[in-house]
Length: 439
Image (tube, rainbow, N blue to C red; front, side):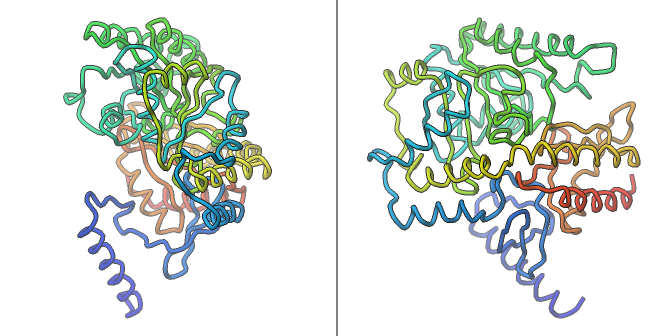
């Protein structure tokens, strides 16, 4: 190892040491973390100038440091940024724009700073409007890290610690779940079987005296390993929850803003209209802004009983960032790009899977893809190599991640500007890494 490389490692080690000293719970990606100092478009750059293809980031969803987003933020912060309880047209204009992308009836907004806050507010609204306390979520869910939403994030703690106002249902995993596609069951039957599990959750919450306030679900099932719910599943679950007096909350933090391609919002792929939609991560292109969209009737009922405001949620700079992101998605045709490049990427991954039996299943939509790695395609024993693949891909200049209950699902979720050339590079490097693996 030359002196220059030793110096680089020494500097990074010192940076990690300082971080660990002053950060509580200092979690970092990768065993050997990268010190990124610059982002541009689809690329991230470390302090040595090496570039990495970002196939993971949905925060800078329209690309890192997009000029229009940078200009919107810098121009507004140089003009005015203050409390949200003053009148300012920026947030009004954005609210009109945002609700125009939603189905009729989802027409009023609340603003927060994070997806956690948005989900927290959504649950407060649901409890107030329904008069109930209980929540139904998917097993191994993640919705945020406040006390309430942390308890609704079943992936974050043992089931034995679950409060009795939280009931979980099995995710509609048609590859390795209780009911599977290709095992003599049609998609219609799969939707029915998985939706029926909601009945048990409703009974559980009713017997505990909580009733059902809400069903909250991430439309792409990110923490469950990226799933394609069978058609009819959400419609049947929504009907059951509404009959029980609860509201349906679509957590669009992961799947929203054109990520899945065919529609702006993930729930639209399932022909349902939720009572409440929560937004976060990609909303501001890297600037912290999040929100809740619901009906006028629900919002008014909540505000008649609760005094709610948010000092920074929807401030002029956040509104400017959010408006620029939505405008870029529309003006640059990024939904069409997601459809086109997503289909191309999927075809290349299908070809790759034929050569590498470690890839047991490929799923997802648009530019949100999950590759489940298995040791055996019959037993579906989860492969333990996923995180090794993530590390090796990083060493090859490609950033991906892993997710799922067993940590065996590779997550590919690049900015929406991802191109066919980017997809080819991803496939090239992934083929090399998979070929080098010893199972």
